[in-house]
Image 1: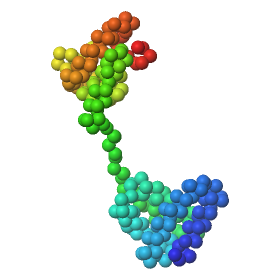
Image 2: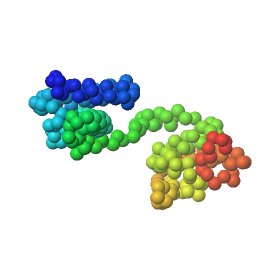
Image 3: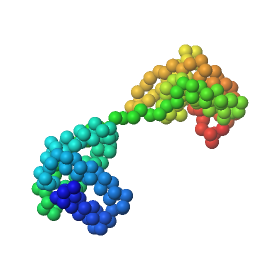
Image 4: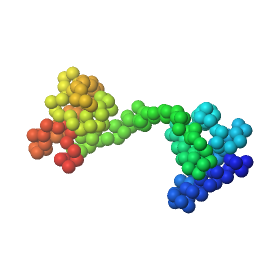
Length: 217
């Protein structure tokens, strides 16, 4: 690799380590990012860092994206490149920062992990509602699974929110928006079993909430 390409990187890494006293792990990340760019620059026959253009850097980013690197990883690399060019400009080794005009591709939002039908069924079937707490927990899981409520909505449910005849639960969600969610027969049976046991606890009968927390049981 040509001295015009590698020497400024070495000087920058020394500055990070000796002057800014960044951790060895952080400096190693900068080194890895910049060496990948240096290899690309060499392949493109770019003579030194002063002539790298934003358009060429975009091509490098597109190349990384095609290789399967995530938007977050590419964003980190662009941050490394921006810092490197700030160093070059400070010491008169470049006049402008080509990375300022380049953005990383957006990362795809990952869907939250969920249990599949068989896993959820196994979990529910292994819950034995033979105690107050177990009956409450089964009611929570059955209603949660059946209605698709958010956790905060489930915790805030009151007895008056449940329509046992039509198998409906009335919810006030985000932005104080009201909606109605249906629930199935298994959730209904679990709720009724819990309420039967709940009624045996005299100090719970005055509570408006459907599912008291553990400290109340």
